[in-house]
Amino acid sequence: MSLHAAGLRAASVLAAGALAAAIAAPASADRSATPPDRSGWDDLVWEPYRTQSFTSPAGQLCAFTLQADPVADEEMVATVARFADGSPKVEAYKGRLVVRYTNVETGAATDKDLSGSAVVRYFEDGAYTMYMYGPVGLGFRETDRYPRGMYVLDGFHVVHTGADPADRDREMVVDGGSEHAICGDLD
Image 1 (tube, rainbow, N blue to C red):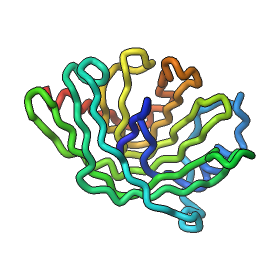
Image 2: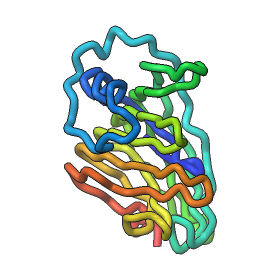
Image 3: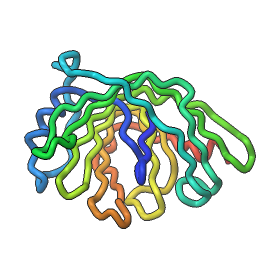
Image 4: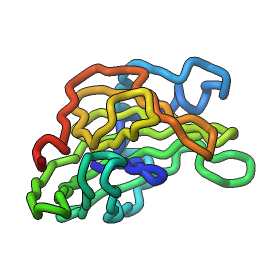
């Protein structure tokens, strides 16, 4: 599952237990969490979601230009809660996703199974927190509070993205698993 915003985008779902906590949490609350259970998951209204291809210029995520293309995508999204204006407050993602990552300069490529799940809690100030149970894909830039790179995150991770649209810095606030650096596979 690939999460690429500026677009690192959210990609699959965790559980209804986290949804209740995310919905109830005020914007000023601690934005980390413990893994939720999956009760109530099947009661949500799921719609197809498709991860888009993206190209990351050399130096942004990897030392080289990185191309990411879904080769299998059966993802689903459910809007769990909305703000008063109708925009999503909490979204859940789940489903099969395989992404091919390519070093554009050399042509080296690797396919990664990113069929994990995620719950994304949006805040009124533009910030958002991703509660992910991997494998999921996530990129960090030089300006983020985690080493630059494109990663497969496996296990439970929580990543908060700040509200400032100028830089949207990202921070790993819960690391409950492993991180595999995709850029190293393609050097």
